[in-house]
Length: 341
Ligand code: NI
Image (cartoon, rainbow, N blue to C red; front, side):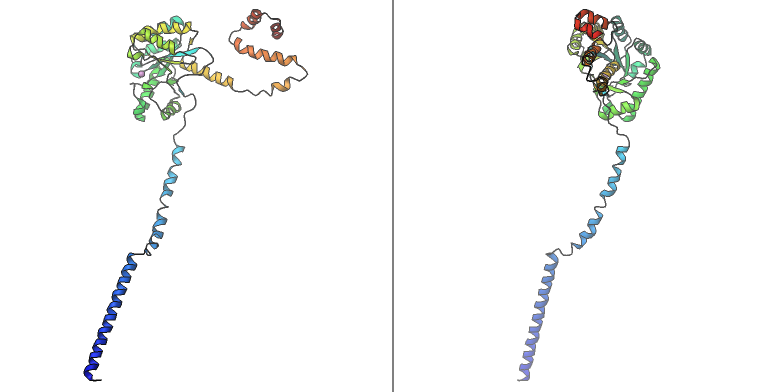
């Protein structure tokens, strides 16, 4: 081998080695790039650190919730929001909102007095402040005075501070004029919700009174229409809505009172109506009878029969003392004579 040829071979060998090295380098670079871009091997290690921090967040939010129910919310007691009452008789409550009025309210009071009828007046504090003597007269004559806010606000759109001010101012005026705190309130426009109903009762002892007969007298349809609507809507336990600031309403009162009385209705205040409903509901509750059973031994057959008839008659004759004497006389049967004994 000549020296020149040896150098040639060495040169080619160098080139070959260089080429192989370059190819190998390029290949490894490509492989590294592919490895970085494609698989997500490094990511699984990161979320392990992130995940434990996220579940820790909802934990501090939970302890806030149990504090809320402990504070104010008390559900409205049954019978605190009333639009009619279930009563065992022909009783109705007529109600007058927005007064007192200087001349019309006394006119209404005169009619009620003439016929021995009772009503409820939901006064606006702004008018109550002007006519305390009219409220005093109404209360003295057996009527009920209720709260209708001071300036006839829509309670559902007012702040709590405003509502408290409106209610407490009017309560104070009613108490100053009549000597007693009101037990009932009527939200202007009938705008009220469960939260307000609860607040009225829990804070002020006021039941929220709505209605189930609306005469729409404020539209001034004429006295005869107001009378007709009141009479048509009346049923036992009804609460009838009117306003004693309209002349047409004041003129309709006599027709309403006499019409209702002619149909056998007694006109009472709202609180009286509610009390009747409460007493009736309590009386209707099933009473424990086991005390009666052991008292009547099986040997006496006649005794239980006598006892069974007596309680049936009792509720009918209940309010009137002379009735027990009259009933047997009217029916006059021999059986009844035996029962009476
Ligand atoms: Ni009103």
